[in-house]
Structures are given as structure tokens and as C-alpha cells.
Figure (cartoon, rainbow, N blue to C red):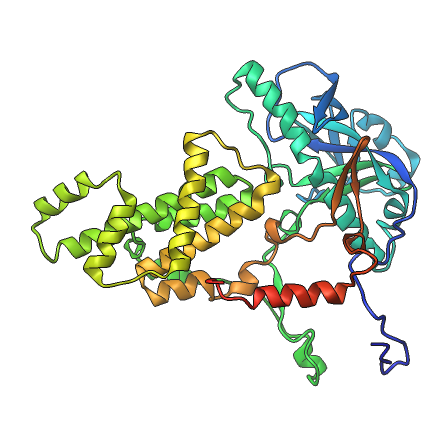
Length: 433
């Protein structure tokens, strides 16, 4: 490109998030610290946990505190100290000189993991430039990559104890981590934006528009998806059978329960098909006969779906039928074969849940509900979604996880522009293709 801006500076030929970081900077040792939402009932201990043939050194503690300066925030931005020696922190002369209230919070079971981090990232965390946000994306990626290791520890604990309260965790369950080490000494790291929200998001409608006045550019509003009057007027009978399960599936995806999301999405379709088939049968038979016929077909979902299409005259396209089959096949593996969808398979789960919802729309044939699910406030509704958080690629090495730059994903013979052109070509294909 090499076009010149109005200010006379030259635009780069390409740009990738992470370009402000020095990826050749050496790796330095750090501790990742995260608090579980429950207690592991065992003593303070060190343990080595093997995951994918990598040995991770961990420490389990229930004697740690967070100390907040001035006020407590969910994002831990005001957390000045984390560890088991809050008295030493609070008695420091520089802390006393702040003349601000200090708030202690006792933590539940806290896990420490030894790993390595790019030194320039730690130096850039609090820089007053673009590298700071990229440094946080790096740390978010590094912390999130270790969630499967945490879950391997939790799985061992559950198998040995059958504890009622312990469960495998996802970013939603452990949204804020601490990184200890390097130049800053301590950094609080929310894994996704929703974890750091202190209010409903503000939407700047004209921030990036050209040819608008400064007054119009400053216009903003606080995100509102509905009103109290609308809630008071709505009748919960608006929901068709299966719609509550459809809502659960969407939420479970954000919370990281991919198995649960697949089960709920499948249940939503099965409940809806029974409902629409009943409506068609009632046009020809009395209620008792209809219920008897539905009872006989209760374990034959494909037969019910075919019968509904025959009676209603609706013909689902091949893409929709494939989506339904793919979702139900995955649900069968989860329920009957014990498959546990891993964090790395969230893309597969998201695809099945989304296409299952589209099939729900096609069967319900209610344009108003489809418009709400798929289009109304679609962009602002997705603000702060955990599943949309930007991440750098991660490689498993003999010593642990290593975060890489986005540019490292491209070979020397392949440019970002080549990749974009290829992706655009693929996305232009029809579902049938």
C-alpha cells in the first residue's frame, strides 16, 4: 500500500495484532495464580501434574489473600497484593504513604503454576502505548492455555474423593488470574472483557464515522436490550417447547459447558418437533389418538421429523438436515459413549449449536422469533463474549506452553493477504457446497 496519511506518515504494508511486542525477547520464569470457585479438601502441597507428556509444577494452597487498594473490583484491577503474607505488604512504607484504605479478601483454594513468559510482554503491561493491550492479550492467552492443566488436577481429585462441589472449570468459572514475576512483579489478568465490566457497556455510535461533528462523535448510550415495560407486558407462553433449552445451549457455550450445550440444543429440537407434529396431527385426529401416536414414536425422532414434513408440506433443505444429523450424532457420542468435549473442541460445539438453532428457526417458521435470535441487536449483544476474546496461537513444548505471534502462523511464502483472499473465497461458498 504505502499510502501517505494526511499527517505525512506512511501506512504499513500489513499489520497484525502483536506487532508492537518483541517476540524475540527471552522467556523468563513466572507463576500463574488462579483461585478456584470451591475448596479442594487437602493440605497445602506441591504436586507435579503431567498433561500431554508435559510435566507442570503446581502448588495448592488455601492460605492466601488478595489485598485491594482503595476499593474492591471484580476485575482485580485495584489488587495490589496476592499471596500468603498480606501483613508484609500492608506494612510497607510506600503502601502506607498512599493513605488509602486496604481491603483484604481471603481466597479459596488457590493454584500456582510455574511457567515462562516473554520478558518484553511483562515490560509492556503498563506501558502508555499500544503494546500494553497486546501484552494483556498475550497474558490472557498464556493463562487460558493452562486451564486444561488445572482440569487434569481437578479430575484426579474428583476421582479420588467424589467431592460434591468440585467440577472442571472454564474461563467463566475462573475469569481472573494473577501473573507474578518479571518487572511488574504482579499483574491481574481478566480473561475476557465481561469479567472486568463495572457497568453495562457504553456504545459510541459515531466514534469511527467520518464527516461528523465533534458533538455527534461524542454521542453515546448505555447498552439496553429491552425495557421494563416490555418485560412487564411479555407473556412467558410466548416460548414454544424447546425454546428454554435453546437459550440454555447458547449460555452454556459462553460458560464453557460444551457437553451441556450440545445436549440442550438437541433437546430443543426434539421438543419443538414433537410440538409442531402434534399441531399437524390435531388437524386430523382427536387429542387421545394424537397422544397415542406420539407415544409410539417417542424414540423415533427422524420418523417424527419426516412425518411432520409430510403433513405440513414443509421441506427442509439438505443443509438443515445435515446440521440436525451432525448435532444429534455428537449428542449421541456425549450421552451414550461418554465423550467429553474439550476446550480445544469448542469450535465444533459452537458450530453444532449455531446450526442447530438455525434448524430450530426453519422448523418453527416464526420470522419474528428468528429475527430476534439472529439479527436484532446482534452486534452489541455479543459485546464482551468470552468465546470472541482474541487469542494468540499457542504451542506445546517440552517445557510447557509457548505463546506465539499471529505472524508465526504464516509461512515465509504466504502473506496475510493470501490468507485473507483464500478465507474470503471459502466463505463465499454456499452451504450446499
